[in-house]
Image 1 (spheres, rainbow, N blue to C red):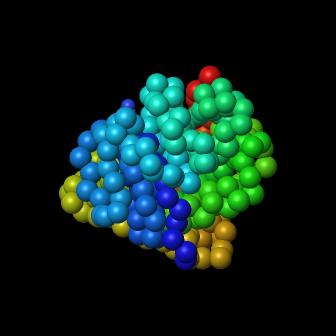
Image 2 (image 1 turned 135 degrees about the vertical axis):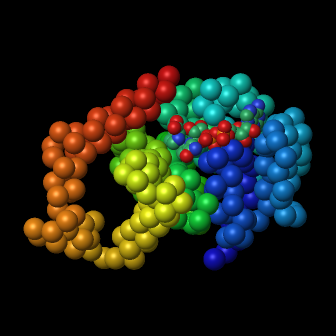
Length: 265
Ligand SMILES: NC(=O)C1=CN([C@@H]2O[C@H](COP(=O)(O)OP(=O)(O)OC[C@H]3O[C@@H](n4cnc5c(N)ncnc54)[C@H](O)[C@@H]3O)[C@@H](O)[C@H]2O)C=CC1
Ligand SMILES: O=C(O)[C@@H]1CCC=N1
């Protein structure tokens, strides 16, 4: 793969750092990273603690906004010296293209991006929608950067972004919660913490890898475990009851999508 373009990354916390780790592995050309805390970076990448310290001569092809949404309005005006020749990739949860246009002005090319933390391993899932002034070349640049850290879905409409966020942006938290709960129930049922932790973690890890390496639907993989009249079927019958997982997951996704929509303004 050709080197990835030069980037200016604003915010290098959980999400920014996950993407940066993925990009560094894939040959990121040059970057300046704004992060308030210490950060070890290989040369020629540069770490600064505030936007005031970004070298004036630096010409990033893309500026990635990965700070908290509440910090964004305060930081964005200080980025003016670097925005002219760059496309903005906004990772900000909930902040929509209209909000971004109001911050940067009508003409600034802006792409709204919703990645997730498995990007760190190149196993991310990123949903993307481009603003009206983004050129085909800039779309390609965004696509190259995001494909370097996993799968990319270009949405047909920005309306899809709230649910896409609720499923994939937030999704790793649901999977980790499942691992947490499996461990907790194991402990409650008398297993040692060490054994319950191992059983829960390796089951989630192994199942995700199996799904990722299989051409079968998740339903088929599930049915391959649940022998008719056997043991798994008893548990699946409890979980699949319409009032159990189908209902709670639907409510959970709706709650997250509603919050994403709420954060647009
Ligand atoms: N954590 C996740 O799984 C995901 C997060 N996001 C989005 O990513 C963004 C960041 O979230 P997290 O990484 O979880 O937050 P975080 O709190 O871990 O990171 C925030 C970063 O912003 C930096 N920052 C704070 N004030 C700053 C300032 N004045 N100038 C420059 N940088 C400053 C901090 O140093 C830190 O690097 C949010 O907008 C969130 O909606 C999107 C998808 C997934
Ligand atoms: O929880 C949040 O607000 C961010 C957006 C998606 C994942 N984390």
